[in-house]
Image 1 (cartoon, helix red, strand yellow):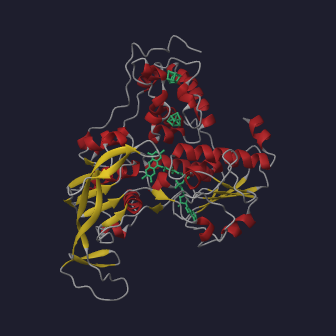
Image 2 (cartoon, rainbow, N blue to C red):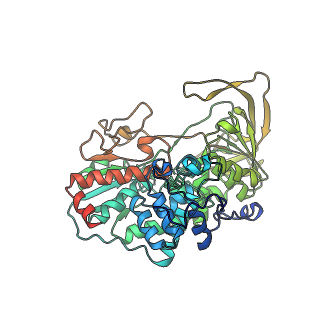
Image 3 (tube, protein in one colour):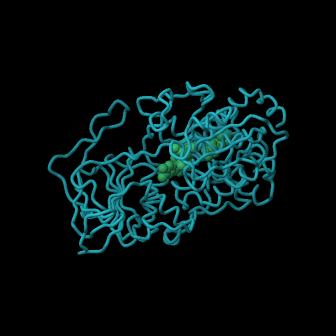
Length: 506
Ligand code: FAD
Ligand code: SF4
Ligand code: SF4
């Protein structure tokens, strides 16, 4: 219901939280947007026209009750806004920070169509839950009663954690297995701190652990424990392992030193931010400092790499993408942020191969220095080629392909060499072959290698085994993983005959 505090989009202009100056923010890995002040959040929330049919809500994967919490913020009823917000979203403060709102909720806000800027939904969502944590309104996870059933969750990313949260609140015994030493999945080791500060993720990990979720970290399923052991231990299992196999490049010298995968590069940088010992970073192998960096790809991972390289002190950072700016998959907001920070985009270009010099011998991935003599033996690389440039082909956009996007076509004879000391491949991710790795051929996969699961319950053809997030969807978004995790948890609670009790208790 609209009140006098609402419908102010005609008189109040859209404002996002203040962005830190590009020069200052290049110096650290802190988030680039400042927090909304209370009055500003209320003012911006009051721009909402309280639509009867809110398109923002229908385009939010979690169907968040956006108009309701905007009204409550505008009226200064923040704690109630928090209650409404957390009812549909397990990690609202994370989605508020990193959802591509321009493609989801905000991109479908109707007031934009009337010539006014969209309501700043994401920033207000983040503000509500950050404030709730500060004010102590976020309670401990405390089930009304313990249940006997247990669920094993493989993968501590947003999909697995969202399921863990709902199941634990219902009193189910939950164990989360992850091969990494910290929970959070790509929110911890993929997405850089300038988009999502790590203490925001660790705060949620702590909340789950304090609420009774058992974390078995440093445990890789298929190596340290078998999938069958997990199935035998629990009444239901959720597979939430994400997608980590990087798409690779061919061409001359594609295996030269200095050509690295985006996930390795970003993980090393994130680990460094935690203060971990990272030999590949300290050796310079995964550190852009003082280097001419070329990043290949046009998605959000590429954007995160270029902006990380800037912060590490690269002498230049160029991003090669085979289509043009209008046709790139990455968020335009992130491209703008990267350009402000000094990244150069080279549109309509693709790598044909690499130039490499025999600069330094390598031992265990560490350069031994120019002129060092390599020896045969354990850990000693015999090929001492280190990248010195990328052979770049120029492209033009041709006819639309099956997906409706214009396909890039090669311009013959227009190749040139772009000098580079570090090349980062950010061409996307594919699923690992889980049925083979886990010796479970019945775990059916699609032709893209993703696990087949029911789109509503997320149950796979294996009884009691569910799958959620990127391992089902292919590389996707945190918000979709959260939705899958919540839906799978509900399906499991239904299986245990526990769903009605949870709804009644809420
Ligand atoms: P993941 O987050 O990948 O978590 C899977 C977990 O499973 C990992 O912790 C992994 O260690 C564990 N695991 C895998 N195999 C095993 C095994 N065999 N045994 C035990 N554990 C295992 N999305 C957004 O919404 N906004 C963004 O800004 C954004 N930026 C991104 C930036 C980068 C660089 C990348 C790579 C992705 C980004 N994404 C973004 C996508 C988003 O991070 C993913 O869609 C989301 O994390 C998927 O969640 P998930 O739970 O399915 O898997
Ligand atoms: Fe928008 Fe994402 Fe929040 Fe939904 S979860 S309201 S899409 S920012
Ligand atoms: Fe408010 Fe925009 Fe959603 Fe309408 S579409 S309810 S104006 S946020």
